[in-house]
Image (cartoon, rainbow, N blue to C red; front, side, top):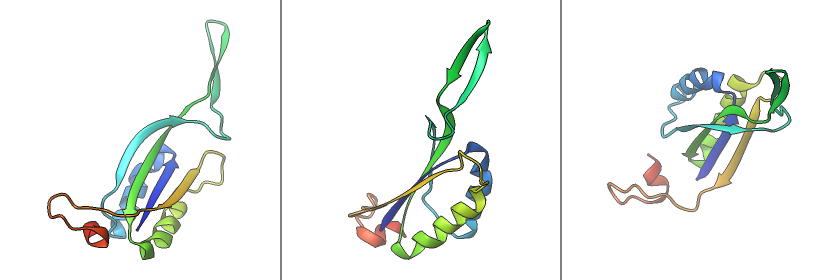
Length: 113
């Protein structure tokens, strides 16, 4: 099992959700976060003073999937979100040691279905 965690532009949420739904991906978590990378933020003038905003609004999506689903899901995320501009985001993949469905007690891969 793998966990896919992606930090992305907020405006792609609906197209991404629809794309993953077409792939029959379930169990998606979404959170609004603030952060910065190469995009850095923006500068505004407020009452004659320059103010730098170093954090931008992003969304973080997380999903835990079977190993064989990882590459197709990553390809779909990239297909939908890539603009070629700074700020498109990052995807992180990590191993999951175990999963437990609380309701039934199922463990491992069976808990994902």
